[in-house]
Length: 201
Image (cartoon, rainbow, N blue to C red; front, top):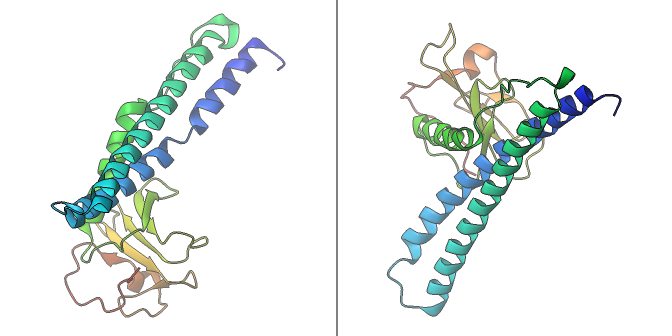
């Protein structure tokens, strides 16, 4: 490291790259899956059902502990970055408050899923759109832009927001599954017509 100030910059970079978005995705997917399993298994007297519920509780605790560790690490790294700022002065941090960031991002995923005219396929994981102006739900293992649903924030053309679906060939498609222009594949969030090509999962 060429300077003490450079160390502060490097620490900030490390803090920014900690996987808080991944943690929010993991929390959302776990909570969605847990709700389905509990609904299915609750009330069962079979031993394997009780074991499955106990395992789910342990998994939830593990995810929460991982979240606490990563958030704690980010807070400590940002504090150190401030100490090693250029000239020994404190560096103000514009990083999001980690606890609030994860909780708000999970809530954003939930709200995006609740706005779609049909349910998001089971198991499709959310993440922020690259431009941070929406949420993307994608089939696990799908490459690049294949098999995904974008729930996008309002734009001048779509003041209520819009949905865009990509097929397995990464093409944006209309409600009938046909590759079309932006006008046909940017479907308003308040669309209430038939959507025969909605992803099945």
